[in-house]
Length: 137
Length: 137
DNA sequence: GAAACAGTTTGATACTCGCCAAACAATCGG
DNA sequence: CCGATTGTTTGGCGAGTATCAAACTGTTTC
Image 1: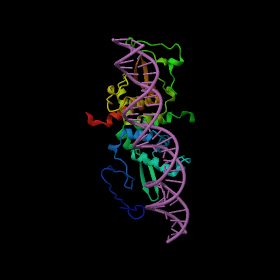
Image 2: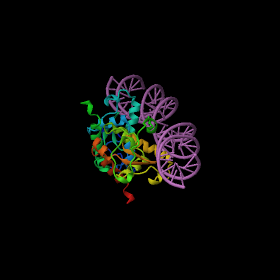
Image 3: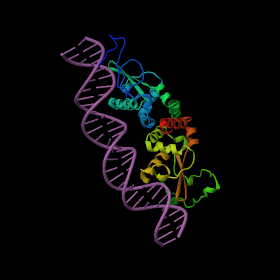
Image 4: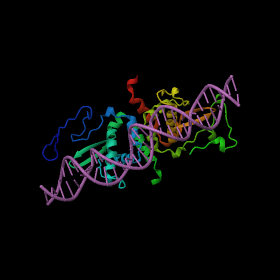
Protein backbone atom coordinates (compact mmCIF):
# COMPACT_ATOMS: atom_id res chain seq x y z
CA UNK A 1 0.00 0.00 0.00
CA UNK A 2 3.00 2.26 0.20
CA UNK A 3 3.84 3.70 -3.17
CA UNK A 4 6.84 5.78 -3.93
CA UNK A 5 6.00 7.77 -7.01
CA UNK A 6 8.74 10.33 -7.33
CA UNK A 7 11.61 8.28 -8.64
CA UNK A 8 10.46 5.16 -10.39
CA UNK A 9 6.79 5.13 -11.15
CA UNK A 10 5.49 7.85 -13.39
CA UNK A 11 1.90 7.03 -12.58
CA UNK A 12 0.58 6.39 -9.13
CA UNK A 13 -2.48 4.37 -8.41
CA UNK A 14 -3.74 4.47 -4.89
CA UNK A 15 -7.44 3.87 -4.76
CA UNK A 16 -8.99 4.54 -1.42
CA UNK A 17 -12.27 3.52 0.04
CA UNK A 18 -15.21 5.08 -1.77
CA UNK A 19 -16.45 6.65 1.42
CA UNK A 20 -13.49 8.98 1.70
CA UNK A 21 -12.18 10.40 -1.53
CA UNK A 22 -14.41 9.70 -4.47
CA UNK A 23 -13.21 12.58 -6.55
CA UNK A 24 -10.40 12.61 -9.09
CA UNK A 25 -7.79 14.91 -7.70
CA UNK A 26 -4.13 14.89 -8.46
CA UNK A 27 -2.72 11.46 -8.84
CA UNK A 28 -0.72 11.67 -5.69
CA UNK A 29 -1.03 10.30 -2.25
CA UNK A 30 -3.52 12.26 -0.17
CA UNK A 31 -4.52 12.09 3.43
CA UNK A 32 -8.13 11.03 4.00
CA UNK A 33 -10.65 13.79 3.52
CA UNK A 34 -14.43 13.99 3.16
CA UNK A 35 -15.96 13.89 -0.28
CA UNK A 36 -17.30 17.16 -1.57
CA UNK A 37 -20.91 16.15 -1.07
CA UNK A 38 -20.19 15.15 2.51
CA UNK A 39 -18.84 18.51 3.61
CA UNK A 40 -21.10 19.70 6.41
CA UNK A 41 -21.76 23.38 6.91
CA UNK A 42 -21.89 23.29 10.69
CA UNK A 43 -18.71 21.25 10.84
CA UNK A 44 -17.05 23.72 8.50
CA UNK A 45 -18.13 26.71 10.57
CA UNK A 46 -17.02 24.99 13.72
CA UNK A 47 -13.62 24.39 12.15
CA UNK A 48 -13.28 28.04 11.18
CA UNK A 49 -14.59 29.31 14.52
CA UNK A 50 -11.09 29.30 15.94
CA UNK A 51 -8.54 32.09 15.55
CA UNK A 52 -5.66 29.78 14.72
CA UNK A 53 -7.57 27.92 12.04
CA UNK A 54 -8.92 31.13 10.59
CA UNK A 55 -5.36 32.33 10.31
CA UNK A 56 -4.45 29.11 8.55
CA UNK A 57 -7.32 29.62 6.13
CA UNK A 58 -6.01 33.06 5.28
CA UNK A 59 -2.57 31.60 4.69
CA UNK A 60 -4.07 29.07 2.32
CA UNK A 61 -6.20 31.62 0.52
CA UNK A 62 -3.49 32.27 -2.05
CA UNK A 63 -4.24 28.87 -3.52
CA UNK A 64 -0.68 27.66 -3.21
CA UNK A 65 0.54 24.64 -1.34
CA UNK A 66 2.01 25.17 2.09
CA UNK A 67 4.10 22.95 4.25
CA UNK A 68 3.01 22.16 7.76
CA UNK A 69 5.71 23.68 9.93
CA UNK A 70 4.69 26.40 12.39
CA UNK A 71 7.53 28.61 11.10
CA UNK A 72 6.08 28.56 7.63
CA UNK A 73 2.75 29.86 8.85
CA UNK A 74 3.58 32.55 11.36
CA UNK A 75 2.64 30.34 14.26
CA UNK A 76 5.92 30.20 16.09
CA UNK A 77 4.19 30.48 19.41
CA UNK A 78 2.46 27.12 18.91
CA UNK A 79 3.88 23.67 19.26
CA UNK A 80 4.17 21.66 16.07
CA UNK A 81 1.77 19.06 17.38
CA UNK A 82 -0.79 21.77 18.01
CA UNK A 83 -0.46 22.99 14.45
CA UNK A 84 -0.80 19.42 13.24
CA UNK A 85 -4.00 19.10 15.25
CA UNK A 86 -5.50 22.25 13.73
CA UNK A 87 -4.64 21.15 10.24
CA UNK A 88 -6.28 17.83 10.84
CA UNK A 89 -9.47 19.59 11.92
CA UNK A 90 -9.42 21.67 8.75
CA UNK A 91 -8.80 18.64 6.57
CA UNK A 92 -11.52 16.54 8.21
CA UNK A 93 -13.94 19.43 7.84
CA UNK A 94 -13.25 19.51 4.11
CA UNK A 95 -11.48 22.85 4.10
CA UNK A 96 -8.07 21.67 3.00
CA UNK A 97 -6.42 18.81 1.23
CA UNK A 98 -3.02 17.36 2.10
CA UNK A 99 -0.69 15.89 -0.47
CA UNK A 100 2.03 13.61 0.80
CA UNK A 101 5.36 13.87 -0.97
CA UNK A 102 8.23 12.17 0.73
CA UNK A 103 8.65 13.49 4.22
CA UNK A 104 6.83 16.69 3.36
CA UNK A 105 3.12 17.33 3.34
CA UNK A 106 1.66 20.06 1.23
CA UNK A 107 -1.61 21.56 2.34
CA UNK A 108 -3.84 23.59 0.09
CA UNK A 109 -7.34 24.96 0.06
CA UNK A 110 -10.13 22.91 -1.56
CA UNK A 111 -11.44 25.96 -3.30
CA UNK A 112 -13.14 24.19 -6.20
CA UNK A 113 -14.84 21.69 -3.94
CA UNK A 114 -15.99 24.33 -1.49
CA UNK A 115 -17.32 26.53 -4.28
CA UNK A 116 -19.22 23.56 -5.65
CA UNK A 117 -20.65 22.60 -2.29
CA UNK A 118 -21.40 26.08 -0.92
CA UNK A 119 -21.34 28.60 -3.77
CA UNK A 120 -20.14 32.02 -2.70
CA UNK A 121 -19.44 31.05 0.87
CA UNK A 122 -15.67 30.86 0.69
CA UNK A 123 -15.40 34.17 -1.12
CA UNK A 124 -17.64 35.82 1.44
CA UNK A 125 -15.62 34.34 4.28
CA UNK A 126 -12.30 35.47 2.85
CA UNK A 127 -13.66 38.93 2.13
CA UNK A 128 -15.05 39.12 5.66
CA UNK A 129 -11.80 37.98 7.18
CA UNK A 130 -9.93 40.58 5.19
CA UNK A 131 -12.38 43.28 6.20
CA UNK A 132 -12.18 42.24 9.82
CA UNK A 133 -8.59 43.43 10.14
CA UNK A 134 -8.47 46.79 8.39
CA UNK A 135 -6.19 48.49 10.89
CA UNK A 136 -3.20 46.49 9.69
CA UNK A 137 -2.71 48.87 6.79
CA UNK B 1 -21.43 41.60 32.69
CA UNK B 2 -25.17 41.83 32.92
CA UNK B 3 -26.75 45.07 34.00
CA UNK B 4 -30.13 45.22 35.60
CA UNK B 5 -31.80 48.31 34.22
CA UNK B 6 -34.55 48.43 36.78
CA UNK B 7 -32.07 48.68 39.61
CA UNK B 8 -29.65 51.10 38.05
CA UNK B 9 -31.74 53.35 35.89
CA UNK B 10 -34.44 55.17 37.80
CA UNK B 11 -36.43 56.39 34.82
CA UNK B 12 -36.28 53.94 31.97
CA UNK B 13 -39.88 53.24 31.23
CA UNK B 14 -40.09 53.69 27.50
CA UNK B 15 -42.49 50.89 26.92
CA UNK B 16 -44.58 51.09 23.84
CA UNK B 17 -47.29 48.83 22.70
CA UNK B 18 -46.10 46.49 19.97
CA UNK B 19 -49.34 46.94 18.09
CA UNK B 20 -48.52 50.55 17.28
CA UNK B 21 -45.99 49.42 14.75
CA UNK B 22 -42.26 49.36 14.32
CA UNK B 23 -40.37 51.09 17.04
CA UNK B 24 -37.03 52.84 16.90
CA UNK B 25 -34.16 50.89 18.34
CA UNK B 26 -34.09 52.18 21.87
CA UNK B 27 -31.24 51.02 24.03
CA UNK B 28 -33.36 50.55 27.09
CA UNK B 29 -35.59 48.03 25.40
CA UNK B 30 -32.83 45.85 24.04
CA UNK B 31 -30.64 43.32 25.71
CA UNK B 32 -26.94 44.16 25.50
CA UNK B 33 -25.38 43.33 22.18
CA UNK B 34 -22.11 44.19 20.44
CA UNK B 35 -21.96 47.20 18.17
CA UNK B 36 -21.89 46.44 14.48
CA UNK B 37 -18.23 47.36 14.16
CA UNK B 38 -17.38 45.06 17.06
CA UNK B 39 -18.84 41.92 15.54
CA UNK B 40 -15.97 39.47 15.22
CA UNK B 41 -15.90 36.98 12.39
CA UNK B 42 -14.34 34.14 14.36
CA UNK B 43 -16.79 34.65 17.20
CA UNK B 44 -19.64 34.65 14.71
CA UNK B 45 -18.46 31.43 13.06
CA UNK B 46 -17.97 29.85 16.44
CA UNK B 47 -21.51 30.76 17.36
CA UNK B 48 -22.87 29.24 14.15
CA UNK B 49 -20.70 26.15 14.40
CA UNK B 50 -23.34 24.41 16.47
CA UNK B 51 -26.33 22.51 15.08
CA UNK B 52 -28.83 24.02 17.50
CA UNK B 53 -27.74 27.58 16.84
CA UNK B 54 -27.66 26.98 13.09
CA UNK B 55 -31.24 25.83 13.35
CA UNK B 56 -32.10 28.97 15.27
CA UNK B 57 -30.47 31.05 12.56
CA UNK B 58 -32.66 29.39 9.95
CA UNK B 59 -35.70 30.10 12.06
CA UNK B 60 -34.74 33.75 12.22
CA UNK B 61 -33.95 33.95 8.52
CA UNK B 62 -37.49 35.07 7.72
CA UNK B 63 -36.69 38.41 9.30
CA UNK B 64 -39.57 38.26 11.72
CA UNK B 65 -39.41 38.45 15.47
CA UNK B 66 -39.59 35.22 17.39
CA UNK B 67 -40.25 34.52 21.00
CA UNK B 68 -37.81 32.47 23.01
CA UNK B 69 -39.77 29.38 23.93
CA UNK B 70 -38.54 26.02 22.71
CA UNK B 71 -41.99 25.19 21.38
CA UNK B 72 -41.92 28.18 19.09
CA UNK B 73 -38.70 27.05 17.49
CA UNK B 74 -39.06 23.32 16.99
CA UNK B 75 -36.74 22.56 19.86
CA UNK B 76 -39.03 20.66 22.11
CA UNK B 77 -36.31 18.22 22.98
CA UNK B 78 -34.28 20.95 24.67
CA UNK B 79 -34.84 22.53 28.04
CA UNK B 80 -35.87 26.17 28.04
CA UNK B 81 -32.69 27.14 29.87
CA UNK B 82 -30.63 25.47 27.18
CA UNK B 83 -32.43 27.44 24.50
CA UNK B 84 -31.88 30.59 26.50
CA UNK B 85 -28.17 29.82 26.63
CA UNK B 86 -27.95 29.35 22.86
CA UNK B 87 -29.80 32.56 22.20
CA UNK B 88 -27.45 34.40 24.47
CA UNK B 89 -24.48 33.09 22.48
CA UNK B 90 -26.09 34.27 19.26
CA UNK B 91 -26.87 37.67 20.70
CA UNK B 92 -23.40 38.19 22.16
CA UNK B 93 -21.87 37.18 18.84
CA UNK B 94 -23.91 39.88 17.12
CA UNK B 95 -26.15 37.53 15.17
CA UNK B 96 -29.43 38.47 16.79
CA UNK B 97 -31.03 41.28 18.70
CA UNK B 98 -33.49 40.88 21.54
CA UNK B 99 -36.26 43.33 22.20
CA UNK B 100 -37.82 43.27 25.63
CA UNK B 101 -41.55 43.87 25.75
CA UNK B 102 -43.18 43.14 29.04
CA UNK B 103 -42.57 39.59 30.01
CA UNK B 104 -41.84 38.58 26.44
CA UNK B 105 -38.62 38.85 24.52
CA UNK B 106 -38.60 39.06 20.76
CA UNK B 107 -35.52 37.87 18.96
CA UNK B 108 -34.70 38.77 15.39
CA UNK B 109 -31.81 38.61 13.01
CA UNK B 110 -29.47 41.60 12.73
CA UNK B 111 -29.51 41.36 8.99
CA UNK B 112 -28.71 44.98 8.21
CA UNK B 113 -25.85 45.07 10.68
CA UNK B 114 -24.41 41.80 9.47
CA UNK B 115 -24.64 42.87 5.84
CA UNK B 116 -22.86 46.07 6.71
CA UNK B 117 -20.12 44.34 8.66
CA UNK B 118 -19.61 41.32 6.41
CA UNK B 119 -21.20 41.98 3.02
CA UNK B 120 -22.53 38.85 1.37
CA UNK B 121 -21.68 36.55 4.22
CA UNK B 122 -25.14 36.10 5.66
CA UNK B 123 -26.68 35.42 2.29
CA UNK B 124 -24.01 32.87 1.51
CA UNK B 125 -24.52 31.20 4.86
CA UNK B 126 -28.27 30.99 4.49
CA UNK B 127 -27.96 29.70 0.95
CA UNK B 128 -25.43 27.12 2.10
CA UNK B 129 -27.60 26.02 4.98
CA UNK B 130 -30.53 25.63 2.65
CA UNK B 131 -28.44 23.68 0.17
CA UNK B 132 -27.12 21.47 2.91
CA UNK B 133 -30.50 19.84 3.46
CA UNK B 134 -31.93 19.30 -0.01
CA UNK B 135 -33.70 16.04 0.79
CA UNK B 136 -36.25 17.83 2.94
CA UNK B 137 -38.19 18.93 -0.13
C1' DG C 1 -51.39 40.43 47.15
C1' DA C 2 -51.25 35.82 44.93
C1' DA C 3 -50.79 33.02 41.11
C1' DA C 4 -49.47 32.30 36.47
C1' DC C 5 -46.37 33.40 32.79
C1' DA C 6 -41.84 34.08 30.05
C1' DG C 7 -37.46 33.78 30.31
C1' DT C 8 -32.81 34.10 32.82
C1' DT C 9 -29.33 32.66 36.04
C1' DT C 10 -26.93 29.35 38.87
C1' DG C 11 -25.22 24.81 40.07
C1' DA C 12 -23.81 20.39 38.66
C1' DT C 13 -22.24 16.99 35.40
C1' DA C 14 -20.36 15.04 31.34
C1' DC C 15 -18.14 15.97 27.29
C1' DT C 16 -15.19 18.44 24.09
C1' DC C 17 -11.30 21.37 22.95
C1' DG C 18 -6.74 23.62 22.82
C1' DC C 19 -2.34 23.14 24.28
C1' DC C 20 2.18 21.02 25.28
C1' DA C 21 5.51 17.28 25.82
C1' DA C 22 7.14 13.02 24.67
C1' DA C 23 7.04 9.07 21.86
C1' DC C 24 6.44 7.43 17.34
C1' DA C 25 6.69 6.80 12.10
C1' DA C 26 8.45 7.67 7.60
C1' DT C 27 11.85 9.76 4.60
C1' DC C 28 16.27 11.66 3.10
C1' DG C 29 21.35 12.24 3.46
C1' DG C 30 25.66 10.53 5.21
C1' DC D 1 23.08 1.61 9.50
C1' DC D 2 22.88 6.15 11.76
C1' DG D 3 21.22 10.59 12.43
C1' DA D 4 18.57 14.52 10.87
C1' DT D 5 14.23 16.14 9.03
C1' DT D 6 9.14 16.42 8.91
C1' DG D 7 5.19 15.69 10.70
C1' DT D 8 1.72 12.58 13.37
C1' DT D 9 -0.06 10.29 17.42
C1' DT D 10 -0.78 9.61 22.30
C1' DG D 11 -1.28 11.12 27.04
C1' DG D 12 -2.35 14.51 30.18
C1' DC D 13 -4.12 18.80 31.87
C1' DG D 14 -6.79 23.04 32.22
C1' DA D 15 -10.42 25.57 30.10
C1' DG D 16 -14.61 25.80 27.77
C1' DT D 17 -19.25 24.03 26.51
C1' DA D 18 -23.87 21.69 26.20
C1' DT D 19 -27.26 20.01 28.95
C1' DC D 20 -30.75 19.66 32.60
C1' DA D 21 -32.85 20.91 37.00
C1' DA D 22 -33.99 24.18 40.27
C1' DA D 23 -34.16 28.75 41.93
C1' DC D 24 -34.82 33.35 40.59
C1' DT D 25 -36.43 38.10 38.32
C1' DG D 26 -39.76 40.77 36.34
C1' DT D 27 -44.56 41.06 34.26
C1' DT D 28 -49.35 40.26 33.65
C1' DT D 29 -53.70 38.72 35.37
C1' DC D 30 -56.89 37.50 38.80
